[in-house]
Amino acid sequence: MFRRLSDRASGEITFTFDGRPITASAGDSVAAALLAAGVRACRTTPVSGSPRGPYCMMGVCFECLVRIDGVDNRQGCLVIVQEGMRVESQRGSAALMAEPAQ
Image 1 (cartoon, rainbow, N blue to C red):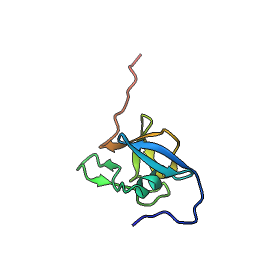
Image 2 (image 1 turned 60 degrees about the horizontal axis):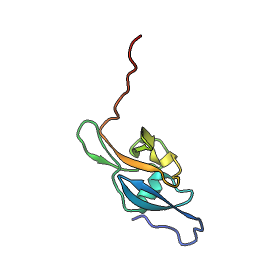
Image 3 (image 1 turned 180 degrees about the vertical axis):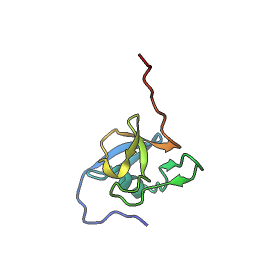
Image 4 (image 1 turned 45 degrees about the vertical axis):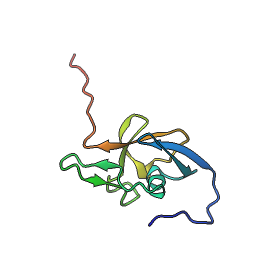
């Protein structure tokens, strides 16, 4: 369903998704790079565990949430992929880090 345009002239970079190396075009968003690599689901819902993937590609729907370099709840459609970036599926809701009361 998704394929690269043949007239696109840009460099290639490599990042990982759930430990698997993926090649992307420089300037791609994380979500676009995942779709181009055949990844259709990048997270599961907190309630039912249903798979979800990029939908609107403009930051409105929040279906493309992923963990990027250890940070949860990043919208893959709004983040430009970088060389060596570690992207992981987000399973359910992100863990909240509470600071101890003082």
